[in-house]
Structures are given as structure tokens and as C-alpha cells.
Image 1 (cartoon, one colour):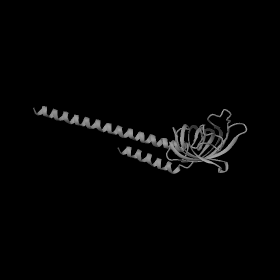
Image 2 (cartoon, one colour):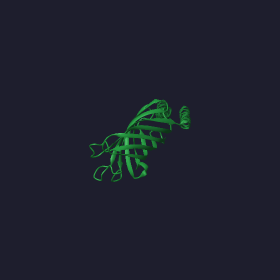
Image 3 (tube, one colour):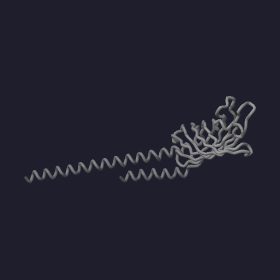
Image 4 (tube, helix red, strand yellow):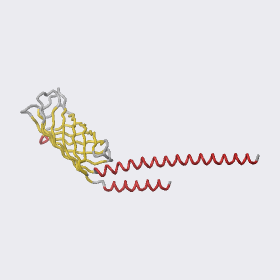
Length: 228
């Protein structure tokens, strides 16, 4: 009887140790998984900062086209210069000055400018090649501010990093003017909208402080994992 009780006691102890060992192993695996996920996010942020930076100066040129019921509408010139600030690796806020002409026919055209404020989302910013989407609100005016209108705009594009800190981009934006007419070019019966397509360059600056913070976070996560 005493022997049976000892055997039962040993079995209970072994079962307890087995359950505890399994639980500890699962917890350790969960910690390692959390560490890997955390490190993956941090390394992607580092990759973003290696390719790009927190501040961006951008310039572009291309063509603008009046939309709507204008069969004789002709493409015309378009130029942009702007500044972007990256809130995080995916999202930035940007302000740009745009100068462009709209032509209804060979003989009728008008010059415009706009100040556009956009939010831009980069799909895979830790890669050299990424699509991006943007949209926002703009202030549109004819030359010498003889007339002005507000507008909404949205667009998409592609960026490719040709070297560290320098990216080439191709993009297009659709603009809807919140007014009945654009300096007489658009009649009240037609849609007040135009399209701009551009090829440009992004010059990335800054990001060193954020790099240091991320490296410190990675070290902290690794050291914490070693303790576990």
C-alpha cells in the first residue's frame, strides 16, 4: 500500500512538472513571437529611414488637362514644388505649390496656381519601390489672384529610390473645383474638374534621431528577451 501511494505521488509530481514545463515552453514561445513581431516592425522602420527620411523636398513637372465636355481641350504645362513631413513610415502630411495652365482650345488658355494640403499614404515605404495614395484640400487661383476657388484633390503614384535619399516618382491627381467656373473657361453646366500628371523627384532629409531611438528599442527588446 505504501509503495502504491509513493508511485501515485511520483506520478502526480511528474504530471505537475510536465504541465509546468509545457506552460513555460508556451509562454517562452509567445515571448519569442512577440519579440520577433516587435523587431520586424522596428527593422521595417529602420529600412524606411535607410532609404528615406522624415523630411522631404519634392519637385515635379508634367501636364494638365481640363476635363468635362470640351472636345478641343489640350494638355498644357504643369509644375510643382513642395514639402512633406513623415508622421510615421507610412503616413506623411504635405504642402505644395502648383503652377499650371488649362487650355480649352489652341487659342484659349488660362494660367493658374494652387496651394494643396494633402495626406499621403505609402504602401510599402521600407522597400525601394512603393505605390502611394494621397488626397486633401486646395486653394486655387488664377494668375495675379484675379479669381480664386477652393478645391478637393486626390491621386496616386509610384516611387522608386534610385539611391539613398533620392526617389523618382510618377503620379497623377484629379482635382474638383468647388466653384461654378474657372476664370470663364468652364461654364456652369459643365464639371469643374481637371487632371494633372507629373514626373518628379523626392529628396529625403533627416531621420537620424529616430534611427537612434529605434536602435535603442531593438537593444531593449533583445536584452529583455535574453533575460526571459
